[in-house]
Length: 462
Image (cartoon, rainbow, N blue to C red; front, side, top):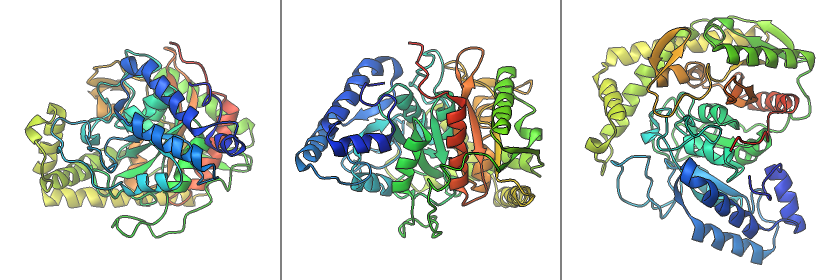
């Protein structure tokens, strides 16, 4: 990580910028220098806006005004967000060639807050996967970074930037964050506008931040959260104080563990790390309770059907695309989605309702937060198409997102923070989930665990 970004959160950098100890131009130059050092191996960026980023930083330096809460902070954006004047590539050879005419709402809010858009990070094609080729994991260049927001996770882990935007339909913020050893938060459904973001599944998609720490993640979330009347899925609920529970620790919290589904298929090193996390939270004053999440096992099939149908429907009305240039995995997934019937889709929605009822009953039983490992294994090898989950071999997408999809099906907030390392030296994440709207509780508990676990800023092996 660049010297000016190392071990400093965004709030700390903002104080330093206001004091004149840190300069926005130096921050951008440092980020660009880190890209030059790492990009040949990591390949986290689809495009780098070097000239524009430096120009904005120089304008901010000349203005010498306090500006917004992200003034001077370089931020990367997943390449399914529209950035005005640039092509939205979607990780695809078949994406339209035209340039975006305006910023997506989240990017607009970042700019308004003073953030400097550094570039666009790689994504699995149209966000429909967890590999994100050609990007490599900074913790092991022979491993995937996860996806579909793989470039965002890899860019943060490689020390290019402290925070980035991603999207999450079945785990696509949390998966790369966990596999790359950083933090990622999928907010409550509808909390962040998706206007100007290419869709995968209209009722499962979430926009949100990844960061080096919970502080960095929240610094972006505070800016991008809030109702957008131009997004039909945008929530009108009031936005919580995301830092409101930062100082409470975990003492007095009741933390639930749903062993069936979440704990019974973990790789041994992931299981051991999760048990250590549980003991750590308990020692810090949390009450641990075994709970039942009724019908949670329906989640994978719900996502297959609902996401499949909604993805096929969205792609079916787009113009300027060349679907014949899509990769085979995406073509196959869209064909499967188009083949589902209306009866299949309604059955998927009924099953989703059962899962939501199970989630509600679980939280009504008296728990504040549900925890699990974020992913059941460490990062698979680059090029892998299958993984082992609980002794069964399955497609990599189904294995990697097994523990993350319940939060998408239910819309509940879900955070991943670094929890430790596997036998192979690769990162393992802890996932914290709460009832819809309880983002502040989840973020506060995650920040407390982050401090207890001490897994942030562990040096990379290269």
